[in-house]
Amino acid sequence: MGMRIMWARLLVVGAQTLPDPIAAYAALEAQYLDFFKAHNFNLNPTVWQGRAFVEKSLGSKGLDNFRSGSYNAYVWQPKGSVLERFYAELTALPEARRMFQCTKEDGSFGVTTLNVRGTTISRDLLDAILELIFLERTFAGLKPMGNVSIIDVGAGYGRLAKRYRDCFPSATYKIVDGIPVSTVVSQVYLGRYGYADSVVPLFDLEATLATVRPDLLVNTHSFPEMHPHDITFFVRLAAAYEVRYIFIAPNKLTKTPNLVTNKDESIDEILKHFGYELFRFENLFFDELHVCDATVQGLACSPGSWGYAHAVPYYAYKRRAVPPPPLRQHSRSHSTSHLPGRNSGS
Image (cartoon, rainbow, N blue to C red; front, side):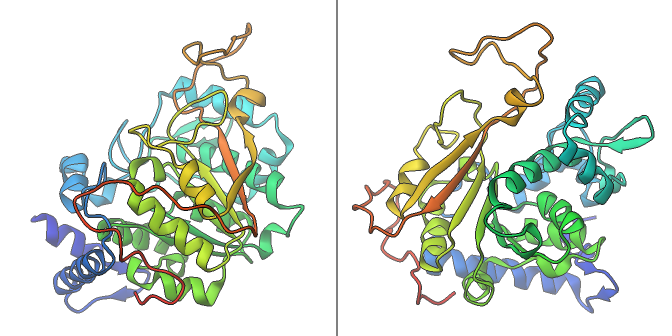
């Protein structure tokens, strides 16, 4: 089966079947391409290079099993023994025990699972629950979690969206991704659980921001994989539509705040320019789950600690009212003069 046909075949959400899915997927790709050109977006991708990147990553698995294997474009799954220790440490937290009651792992799309004392777990589930704990501890005092409106950018297949909506069904949670393949994958994945209405195509992002007026922008493991220009695109829109808070899960493990891309370009500089200041930095893996990594400079591991390669800290930013200083432009082969502002079209 050709790859475009494979993507198209999966353009089925719930009971909706498109009369010509191949044409529908081609049209979606064309709309994204038009958006890229109009907004000078995703022209120099550092990691996510469109459908070809995902096709190569998934190989023969196909989208029916896009969550399978130890590593591909959408998942990075540790061995069972690591998952078991992760689960044991996580269930010591009362918030986690509550969240395990509201969101479950069903093994869909080939995800690696482990059964521990009758509970089916996956890295997807465990990571999401820890992120939910951080979000609840950080923002619940400001607004009930079920009343929060969220835009999750670079959301991939909707991993966190699914868990958040399971546990806080009254919340408004929208997701967007910079490539059309992920838009399709997230429609399929979230559509399985009745959450397809969370998915927003990139070209509808600004209209969605204008309607939803999110309280919080979420980004898990994708800003570090973007060109700084594309990070700026999202942060500028967040500021323009008065998104007050930003939550980021990075890719790099650090003891102190150092939010950078995979190429060590500052993300914090971009956030500061648009008025976002760090107000909480915490590594729950280290502080709560007893994870330790001796390769991290200045970190001393205590007896009984354990290793987890993905034990990254979490960052929470709050927007200030004072206008920021000029932002140093990042060089690239295309002009940066067409970044959208509050009144730009999409």
